[in-house]
Length: 84
Image (cartoon, rainbow, N blue to C red; front, side, top):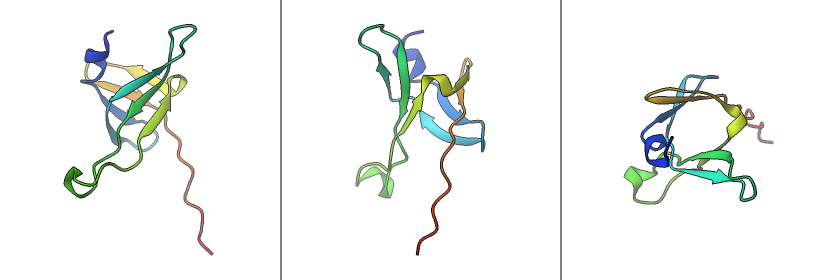
């Protein structure tokens, strides 16, 4: 699979069925050439004018399945801590 094909796939979290976006980049291990993580840019702020929110860095072992149109991942986020 080529990077251009992967960028056309939407990433969906199977834990909460949330759409995370489309693959923007990948992180590779320079020694082995294996994919270490998928990077999905976060949603834009104020119609995209002021940059983006956080990006999702998804370790490749958290990828459940790659289909023709989507990539299913298991992204566990820590619940927000109560403020004092």
